[in-house]
Image 1 (cartoon, rainbow, N blue to C red):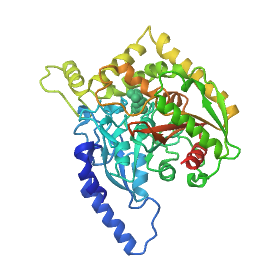
Image 2 (image 1 turned 180 degrees about the vertical axis):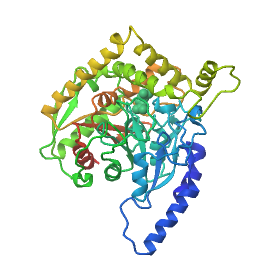
Image 3 (image 1 turned 45 degrees about the vertical axis):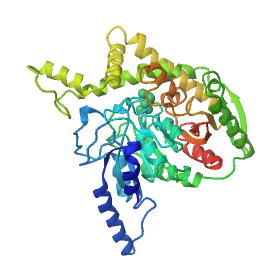
Length: 447
Ligand code: GLN
């Protein structure tokens, strides 16, 4: 049924870069056999999932939506997809994204953008736009995305689904093609909070193959799903309700706060004065780490190699000039500049200090409240092509999600209404370190 649905809507949406139909049907047949044999199966057994195409899948093309990796077939499996496979889940395909996860609309994909299922003239968000659209359009039961500065939460908001970026280190990044390693996290996109909780439970946990992976006891996230919010203290970040917010997003937030209060929560207004510095800080740190991570694509070890070079240096240069798209090149140049001798202290080091201050703002806020709320994005899904000529206006759509990555905190986006055009609006819940259960609790009660 899911493969039929994919065949039906893909010509309009383009959520997938690769559909693994035969493999999915073979896996489904195996599940049927296990059921016929009376075997007990787990919650995820036979569940069709979509996987963002920056997660390495053994024997299945993993492109990062880049010409550089167009024909790259990984010789190993990422930890998260390995865990899902072990749980019996079925992969229906690999989803579209902004090239190397750099962007907010999937328009930076080398293979064409993903349209928004609510209105195909609009973007699906990014960079996990393919995963969000696939979930919203019923092309899979749920999906995995990655989030460096908002790439799970913003497309979840634009497509009207639930998306969670876990605490940094909760989910192993082994086999995730690196963008900015101190910020990247993998997480679920799903139709409901319960589905997201089940999926997180399946992918979280310590992994010796990822040096930043946390070794902590894992709760059963589904136990956190409780219907009322008595005693819960919820803080509204004042810095996120000012100028530049679409009026309908603002009123949806106000209505959501009322609902949360009716469910028993106490609403507190508080300030994170350095929240606004998140964006400039991120656009030093993320490109710096990206410039280092992307140095490996030189035409020797991975994927694409340009023709017609007369020596090694020319081969490197032609490969990178032809293999990377414009946004990826922009990030590599910014990052290389920020890390270069003489500028390191002025840019990278300074950005790291501001990052610490942003973390301190959050820490102070969590002395007063259990959860913070704000809009996920300042607007609903914008029109395709609207922001492509102006990178800065594109970057602004991650204003509210980026500080959460800088502080390593968990953040969840869930639908909280529609604008006048019928486009979904997202509500972001931010928790303290490893407080995913609190996020699920509040989101479940609200949903
Ligand atoms: N849009 C942000 C960027 O372009 C975030 C992307 C992400 O989270 N991967 O960097």
